[in-house]
Length: 285
Image (cartoon, rainbow, N blue to C red):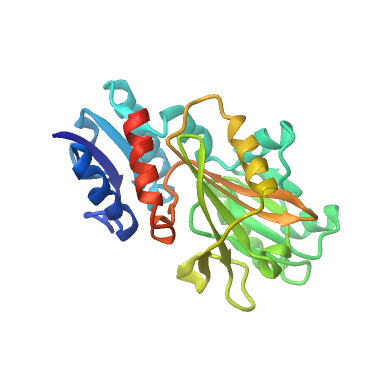
């Protein structure tokens, strides 16, 4: 029986419930899944196929994670998604790269690490009444908040901390996240699999479950699937999995995140999704 590793984190040493759905699909196909905590002793010595899954702590130690990815690649290990895709996707500046190729994203101000900038001045320069502050390297809405001209001065210290740590992005707030919800369209091997629609709890903007958000299986329009697919086509490397997060604004898909490292793939929301993922693993890995 062939073995592959699912890279995970210390909080999920036996993988997440969603990822464990893959074990039942792969085992009959002659593939055994080994959980691999990415920052455990000896993790960089694993030789074989590694699929990045629930490394949900990488943004707390991004330099160490990137070093592990690079060292793993040097051993000849097959890493999915590929190392250079992971490195590119870690810094949210990748959204600027995609915008330059015609992808619709929210209006964004990009700030390098250690930049001296006032949050009030950033908002005033754009005339924004609401904006979202995000670290350039982040996951699960870590150090992410909605700001306004009235609150910006009191949030300056937190803003400086984000700038010092990773650099920041300040995006114009997209109200459709609250009114219409955020789509997650999942692709395996470049092929559309399934989708969910995520909604924040009342009064919030974060759609993650840990902040009270919810998700449900949903069927996006053909137009949204095609727009998401065109975004994926801009990536030159082959991809095992992709989660395209965005909101529909005036009939167009506005990209919020292109998740290529460790996204939840909502496998439990579609009974056939684990089988599709397993097939993609066999084809690409």
